[in-house]
Length: 129
Image (cartoon, rainbow, N blue to C red; front, side):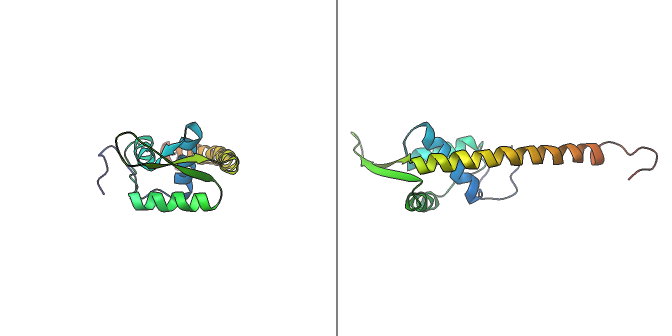
């Protein structure tokens, strides 16, 4: 997998949990088909993560089985029909609760980052470690 030089990701693949939140966020904004989701994930991760097509569709099926998404076939004028996904009310609630959890974690990470900057980046005073 090729990643842009500016991307400093330490792993090749995004964690399943946050990628589901990203999918739900995109679908909250508007119903979307799989190829658009692939493009949005890559764009919103600044090119650091590009899911394999099969992985995305497996994930979408699992989310649909759990009642977070629903899909229907949509006819197109100049190509094959495509499956369009939309968030269900259960999916909206899961997104809301998940993002609330992320906001709380963000506060924890900010506290840990502040501790790191204070204790490990500042030069020690008079022999402190």
